[in-house]
Image 1 (cartoon, rainbow, N blue to C red):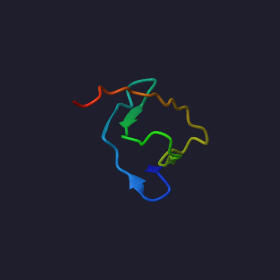
Image 2: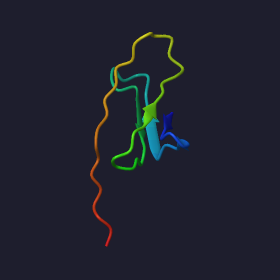
Image 3: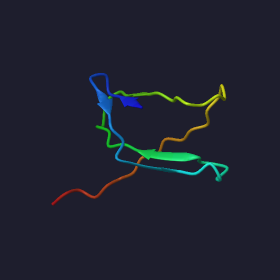
Length: 62
């Protein structure tokens, strides 16, 4: 779940597989530049989570 401070941000896309060592799940969000966000994880019995955040550049419209 991602929260931008005003509301929850819906995921744009996702995929996952428990058969893969890493990553188990990939979730994509459209997030506004220069804004703070809260990322919340749930549903894991493991007390630690390994994660990566990557920037995806999209071509300018027009």
